[in-house]
Image (tube, rainbow, N blue to C red; front, top):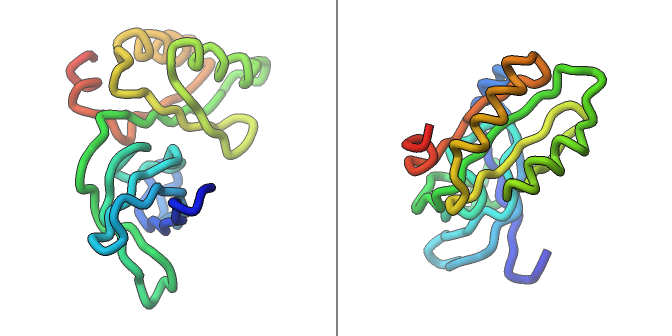
Length: 154
């Protein structure tokens, strides 16, 4: 990462894991004095923000690092969590398919990944594909952070 980046600690309850999760995310420094940072990763387990959102974070004595406090400005991006249920499904091919629709993804293992739906992408086509795969029991998916724009496209 560049000199204009900072790792931010995020502590939150994950509905996926059903426990408190601690995650560190890269963020672009917008204004250190005001504690403003732009999230540069796709969050894995479901905090209430997505990549490119502007957040307020400050140094936390207990955590001993810069720590997320709240969202200041939503980017309009959405985050989708996907778990592959079909043992024969090629996960990389699935990621490439969504990438061709404009969605980036990051994975924690070979069967679970998170996907970003950028603000400028229509969610209806993405949701159609997700729903088809889910109905066929090939994947399970969750929408931990859906922008107002994407929600209205459902």
